[in-house]
Image 1 (tube, rainbow, N blue to C red):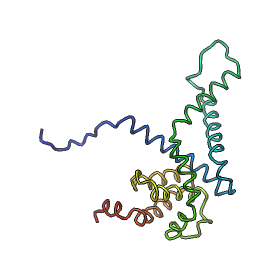
Image 2: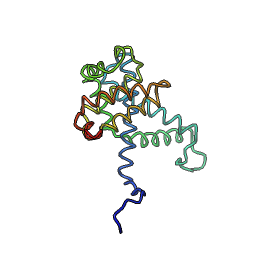
Image 3: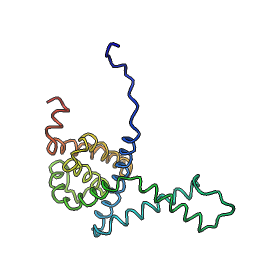
Image 4: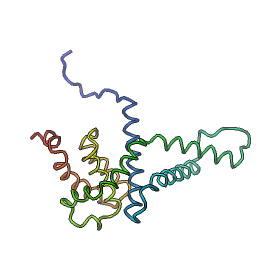
Length: 199
């Protein structure tokens, strides 16, 4: 063997892929909670249970509409039995998110919002209060991960926040989020950014 790279990628570890998916789902749920908090100043202690219930209802609605393949095939199940099975299946699906990361993002973003907003103000073109709630929530999540989640590479923190803005925000909101967090990363993770940029 020559030791040269062939260009083929090694298969990804399924556990690692599940971890990535669980974190991604936690970020999406956190964005929904932060959106509510930014819009109406909702009490943070009520957010996590409400985010969970909202997510469960969304999953239940999707499962009910598409028909669940995992429902029992008992003869003529009652409506209540079907609803209970769908609810259980939704709870299992919800539990695939990284609950620890969800809690850390929701509580951390809210507790450190003044400091995160202070960092973001240096790079936004208007007061943070005038940002779209989706963009603001995505920026808070990205800035929080940059500042407090050293296990998340800076590029991942930025990309995940950009993906949230793409999925939930306006047409070009993700470009704005990308530009702001790219600048904030240089402040919050200077060594990591410099190393990645060859400096």
